Every structure is written in structure tokens, then in C-alpha cells.
Image (cartoon, rainbow, N blue to C red; front, top):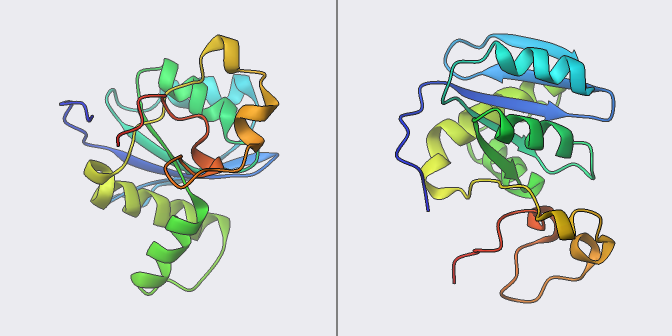
Length: 155
């Protein structure tokens, strides 16, 4: 299920239609970039090899970052926003800003990555399938936020 790569850098990203706000766990370094291919590719080149990056599933706005980060060789986690919200509440974080959200995501993946599922892009034949992301989940299927996770979902 998980890779044996030793991860030294955990990055949380708050995704919106126009911007990405990132936070590196431990250092707290933050950066805001535009949610456009050229800006994302340039930013990803600055990250250490083997980094883990987490983001909430946000409509389709997270897909470009998730796909580019995965292609760049990073460990990518696309998270259910409800899980991140509950985690934040559980650790006593009540503020809700893009910078705080990015820090919470970074903390979440740093501490919980061994229990999370890695993202992998959809098969090319399913990339434009609207039914794949809008179908109601069954009791054993992943939530819609996880509709783009690998087909090898554990039982």
C-alpha cells in the first residue's frame, strides 16, 4: 500500500480556483502561487525529492496540482475536506484561513501519512467520465472526493 521512500518534507496546500497556498511542516515556510500549470511546475521543481504533498479535494481545482505533483515524483495525498476539518477541530485549531488550512494539511499528512492512501491519476479512459465522479457512493466505495484514487481500493 505505502512506498518505502523516507519522506523528510511534508507540504500542505490549500487549493482554490485561482491560488495555491502552501506550508511546509516543521519550518512553517509559506508560499502563494497561482493555480496555473507554469507556476505549479516551477514551484514543484523547488521542492526536495521524495516530498509528500497533501491537498483537499476541491471540486476540480486540485486536479492539476495533484497530477503534476504525482508526475514530478512526489507522494501525493488528496484528502477528504471533512477529515481535515475534523482533524483541525480535534487538535484545537479553530481559525479558518488559507494559511492556517495549509498548515493543518501539512501537519495532518506529517502525522497520519502511514494511514492515508496515495493519489494516482485516473486511467486515460476514465479521465473525462463525468459518471465516475458524480455517482453516489455505495457503502463500500470511496466518497466522491476519492473518486480519482487508484482502482485498487483496499477491502
